[in-house]
Amino acid sequence: MSWAPSVCRTREAALVYMDRSGGLQKFTEDCKRYNESNHSYAVYRFVISINPTDITELDATLGNYILHEPMRAAQIFQSVCDTAIKTLSLIESYQKESQINVVLRLTHLPDLPAYHLNLDEFPMNYKSQRLCMLKGVVIAMSTVTKYTQGARFLCSEKNCPFSEGFRYIRVHIPGATESATIRTDFVCSLCSSLLREDMKYRVLGEKQVVELLDSRALQIFQGHSTNIGYCELKSYAVFVRDELINKMKIGARYRVVGIPVCGPNGPHISVCIEANNIHQYIEESPSAISKPFQSLLSVAMSSPWIFTGILANMFASQVIPIGVYNTLKLCILLSLVQTGKDDEGSGSFLDLLAVTSDALVVDRLMSYSICLVPRGVRHSASNDLFATVMKDIRGSGAASIQAGSALMARGGICFTGDLRLHKKDKLDHLQSVLESRSTSVFIPGKKYGEDVNHQVCIPVQSNFWSYVDSCPKKQGHRESTFIGQVDISVVPSNLLDAFGMFIYCDETSDKHSSLSLVHHNLQRAVSPETCIYPASQLYTTQDYERLIAFAKNIQVNMSKKSETLIHGYYLASRRVRTDTHGSTMPASALRHLQFCFLCTTKCFIPREAL
Image (cartoon, rainbow, N blue to C red):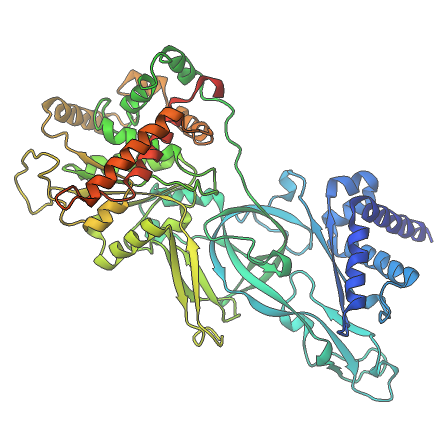
């Protein structure tokens, strides 16, 4: 009989916690809403927020149940709710404890290895029904569908006492399929007759299937693997229900608390996650730049341009010589610091379009640069740039929106490569996205089992980098040209105006630059691991990563002098645009110019931010 005091103690602890955390007040308000409703209920659903740390300090046994036996913990809170309803007469039509459906919504889990779920671990403990935590990026999301949240069954034998009342109540439990809640072969425990469902009391909820890719797999999208087309990416299927619906966005990064279960994945069986709670994952930013850059900044404080100029001059010395393509390198740095904080869109974007006579060098420079931010994605022409729709392979028949390269690069950089390799319809779509910062997908209702069609609008929160080769392979001889003479007819003028920065790169006319490139490439080919320049050892790639992560979070305000200068540009641009013989200056040019001011200030890093 030693278990009886233990059960009473845990129930008392659950009641005390609900009282202290405000859960008891919310519970009584929910009961009042049920009691005042004109509908008849067979199932009363209550969501209780649980802080594992607080409840473990209150009662270690109950805290252990919540972390490792959540179903048992839910039964304890169910018993507490049953006693409260009966004692206080909160719901007049309430009859039995089985009518209560308690959902314990955990705020977090202990940040310990035992609570982290990884697909590369074997064997996986998915049968324990305990809670775990995983971090990942949303790569696909289905439309919202219905599922059975709860149902009432009655014995089909009229003379059986269970042919009425609320003896047989079935509710959805984490990891259960629809057939576990609703079936036609349930039998009465008293007379063994078949049970029939009372359709009047069926309760429907909403569910959504989200595919989550482990954050560590993002490196493959940066172009590190040459066989990316042959890679099979394993993702988690996360089942999101009711209050958690639409809390996740495609391309964003989240921390999910849930219970791993074994579920269908097309023709196979795979590990799925029943989400208990969802939080957006924000990666911590460094508190300061590295020591070498701090020393350099202290020397260069006399001018706001010296430090930024040195940064651009030495940037990417691992892949191209120092002093080559400085304008492009400066623009790349400005775009990098204008990326969002992890998955949060910055609200202002700085897209780059470079026209070059040496596409290989520019491609190498941009490929190196996208690896300096957590969300840098190199787009492959064989993949989709934005989003596509396909049928969910898990049997629901719903439409599933698959993320393309631009959505995977949310809060980062999407490197599209040479624009000449893209078809006209793709370039038109890219122009539309650059102007509106959103894309839309059409979901035909008839194809996916719905009555109406849907148009889903998805925000695109990434910077785009592209280049155009001004000397195609069919052109044998290359001549030096001025920026006004370069042929960029392959790029539509509207698309050209949509990019925030247009950079013309031509180092072939400079004999010193050409020799530097040849010398650098030969040395890298002979000794790939050798640092050619001392600056590469003093200011490493990791130093630039830390600098960018720190600088992009600096809050920059426009000074009065800068606002006056921008206003002057605005008035001048209005005269230029209204003049019939004037320049075709795009209206977005001033906005991009303002972004350049802000980004340059971030790269300079004010002294008070150190």
